[in-house]
Length: 114
Length: 115
Image (cartoon, rainbow over all chains, first blue to last red; front, side, top):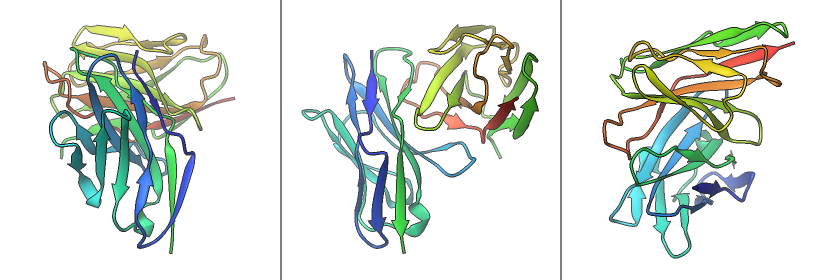
């Protein structure tokens, strides 16, 4: 069965500094990996996904993520954080064999200070 | 604009009453899902449906029921058997149809409070 771990409940960063939100995963086969963002009292919005190919994936709002197969990680990054990036971020994984459930991590709250 | 509509946004019920949460999508997506979100626990899958007239239990289906009579609609009923129903409920859909890497699209959720 697949699983996702987001080891940090909260990440604090100053505006203009780079940010990283960590995610590690476990699947039996090959993974499909996703990052979503959630603003208060709203649904989740898709940011980016990794299917295959280039290990660096670029997504919405200047976010990118790096797939590392040996470390089973898929960390979310942004070179320069904005106060408006403050939100709850979820990593999710799905195995690439037919229809599989999407499994979410517990979420990491990102707080960007001015 | 295409999207997923969940209604109502807030719902209050007395303990022992069944309640139905609405979810409608106009994205022409095959698959639909219901998730429950509780603080610190991420999203947990309640039920999902890959196609009309078919659905499967997720990880926490006890005390919930669904139907999928139309492609656009996937209502969730929270029954009195659900021990702790107060939560934020999220509906989602995805293209599927053999494309298993398509992202999920989410509605804006229904916050259910049972007292």
